[in-house]
Amino acid sequence: MRCSWGVVVEGLLTGSISRIVVIEIKSLSHTFNGSAQPVLQISGLTLGNECFVSVVGASGSGKSTLLRIMAGLIEPTAGQISLDGKSPHEKRDVGELGFIFQAPTLLPWRTAMQNIVLPCELQAGGSGSRQQDVNAMLSLVGLSAEDTRKRPSQLSGGMQMRVSLARALITRPGILLMDEPFAALDDILRIQLQEDVRRIHREQKITFVLVTHNIREAVAMSDRVLVLGDQPAQIMADVAVDLPAVRDNDVRRSSEFQDIVNEVTDALHQVV
Ligand code: ADP
Ligand code: MG
Image 1: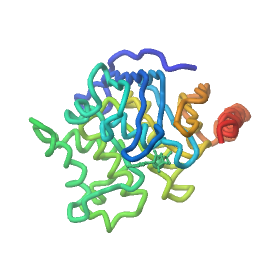
Image 2: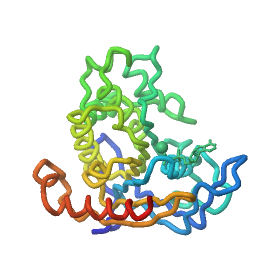
Image 3: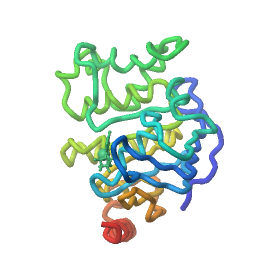
């Protein structure tokens, strides 16, 4: 199943409208300073259409580099990347692109709420956040009003990640990039957050790109899994995840789920 073109729909957040974001990559290559070889070489790739895409690959294969290029945090040394025809940093500067790192990266001296609304304060020409939007956001990510009065050090790792998610979503981006966001969480919390993020994806019609080294996580969350080979990173397999939209326990235990996990695992074995 490939994600089809969606229509513009009213999102759950008050007044939010989902925007279809399409990432296009052409002849992309990146070589770090001082290195003789490119770390990444991708001839062509189109992502988006409100799709949930995961990128899996061995450690050091270039997953984070690819995601950082998509986020406009690294300028590629050759080739083109565009998001709806714009450069990634143009999209980021106007709050249309969100990024979540492995660590929640919250400001320790601010309360959870002050961290969540920070992007609205920083956004050029931003008009701040409306209380009703903030309240809808809190319920979307599963935070109570009491949680938001606490500082990050008073919150568990899972709650900190929820705050990080709310902060990334508060500007209502059309695309959210996540770099191994659940790697530090225990299994129960990780599965809970995976299900919640998948629900947010369905309800808000946002394009998600998730980098993970966890194959089951990639299959549980995505509509499409890209397998990266390394030296240089390139797309070795593009696996469609043709499973029901809700990935509950029954789906995760099904033979169809296991078949896709096996397909991705085989593709990874061929490249390492
Ligand atoms: P992954 O996220 O798949 O583990 P990365 O994208 O972080 O891989 O790194 C890919 C390769 O690029 C690794 O060999 C890493 O050492 C190298 N690399 C990453 N960042 C830099 C940098 N800023 N300067 C030089 N080399 C880097
Ligand atoms: Mg990485």
